[in-house]
Amino acid sequence: MKHVSLGKLLPALMTAGLLGLSGNLAAAPILGGQLYYAGGSVTVTTQPVSSGYTSELWLFDSSFNRVGASYITLDEPAGVTVDITSLITGAGFGIGDELIFGIYVQNTQQEFYMGPASRNPDGVLHAAVDVVSASPVYTADVGFEDLTNGGDMDYDDNVFRFEGGVRVNPAPEPGTLLLAGIGALGLGLMRRRPAQG
Ligand SMILES: [Ca+2]
Image (cartoon, rainbow, N blue to C red; front, side):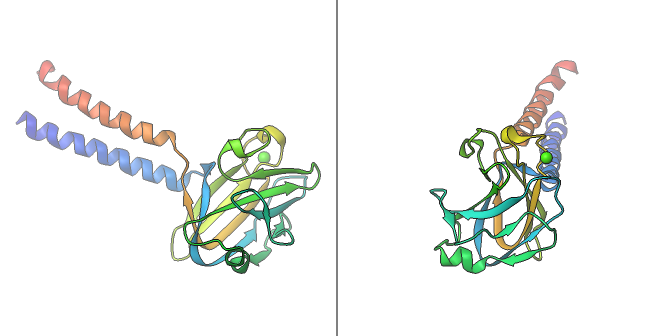
């Protein structure tokens, strides 16, 4: 009897952990997240911002060289949509290639990038990816901090909405550790119960 009930307990705990984890990932912006080309068309639309600075949005290649003759868009006004499909394909990006977007802050002449902190001159994260919708049109908002050392780190200084052929690759999250912890808790319960009975 014990084995039957405990055998049900652990999967239930694991399932609860998985549901909690996936729900959390869907809701929370992914700090240091990266975008990859998934084929087809891609548009970017400026969103309302919270910054006194003016920033340019650029696409960079894997050597962090700017792609294209000019910036894609400024961070404001909101509601400006640019089709960047030809920019991506024209530069030779293929499906699965990372699309490194970054900002050039005109006021301070600094450049910051999506992805790991190590890419940035100050060694801190400057962008977060918020997957707004996975279907029917994949929609992800990328928010940047435009101040050295990440400012207030709420990642809303410049926000750009990418729609269409992009996908996010989540950065390693503490949530993975949480799931492992829940599993260990379940195992702990399995071992404790017979001793208590
Ligand atoms: Ca901010």
